[in-house]
Length: 314
Image (cartoon, rainbow, N blue to C red; front, side):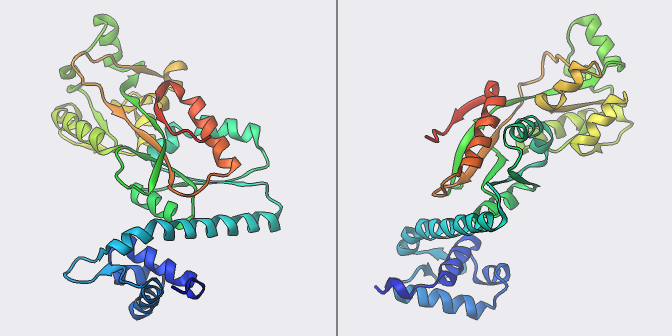
């Protein structure tokens, strides 16, 4: 096999087709024609001495050779991306750059405190943080746009390393002026039927939590005049602070508002425990530099009371 004849463009084409499961989508993603993608794959197959894809049937599948080669192709592309980033840092005088993507609920609830601490310890490090959907975060990790991501469990991608797994309670909250706050103070606790008499703001979080909240909101239609009121997490917190209803939000996000006396946690006796499960992840085979290792350390230290599993980075 003549390895010197293998081109990076061929490896890029192979990795993208494997990820997309389709030549057409891979061509679109790389701004190439489908024949150009096919030509690069065919050339790579000649160099490797066998077919990388089983083209029979409607579903494109990796052959055994393709399965064996894919993790190494991903590693090659990750190393190149890291090397180019290091060169860019050298030319621009940077000491490093934190590149991170997270789901919207985690941006609001889990990122501010660790980011503040990181900025205090490393004020000269550039920071780029994206708010994205889970599928977009995974693509950004594969493409080298970000180095670490914060998604929700479970995840089934074997090419990702779960660096840290957290569990956070989802709590019902109301304004201190809301009737439910007074009822709880009188009775010491509440039952689910008590909250159905009031507007319940629906927020979207992880699938399991959203399913629970959807059920609760349906039962609570009569309390909101028959309507389902679905709003972003940030707006839900604001509406509740204005005394307009109740909602369910991550404990870390609303703790500050409880501490300063604007919100009250609801103790609902017959409510099942609902947990959010944030996951810090990185692409397998990509070595984490000092900047990202330090941010992970700070993040895990801040939320150590919620940490249920961590990867040894030593």
